[in-house]
Image (cartoon, rainbow, N blue to C red; front, side, top):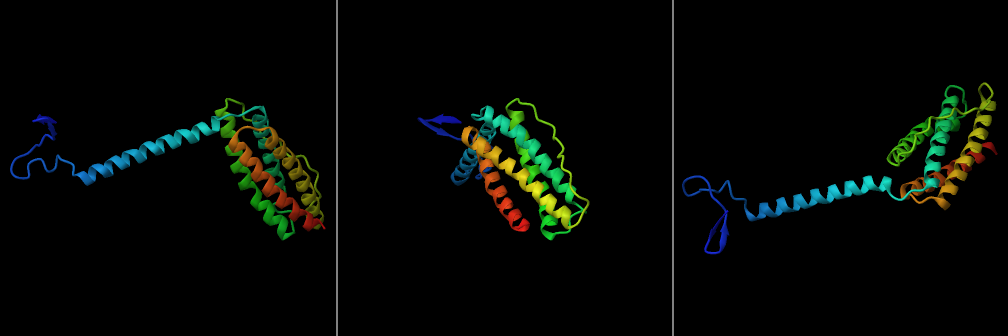
Length: 192
């Protein structure tokens, strides 16, 4: 930049009448570049905010919930896998096929929270349920075991909802209460 009679002018390079045209950025492009830079800054701040959210205020109840619910979800996966090839009911086959993906997604999220809080990530504890061989007796026993298991998960979610402080944990607890409550109602209908 050079000063000429109190005004700042861009330095122009090149020769001839179009001298400096490539070096000067037109006004409309400067606006676009400024807007792009501001958007980039906003996205960076939002990214930092999301990362900080997992470190946001959390307490002992949030840590206990994630630790216990990881084990609980792993047991749900074990129960679902036990139904593979043994269930005869279309409902049991569909439910047991659907559960693992949802539970694994929650486990991954809770593990990331625990790591961000500097807490140990638990290993899954296998579900210990004695279920009959296969067929309708298996379906009924499996639905009964899953219903009882989901009931314990609802109790855990209710507990953290009352005493937890971590926003994402509370959102997960609400989701668990909503989804597992519906699943329990459908299981009750199947067992009726």
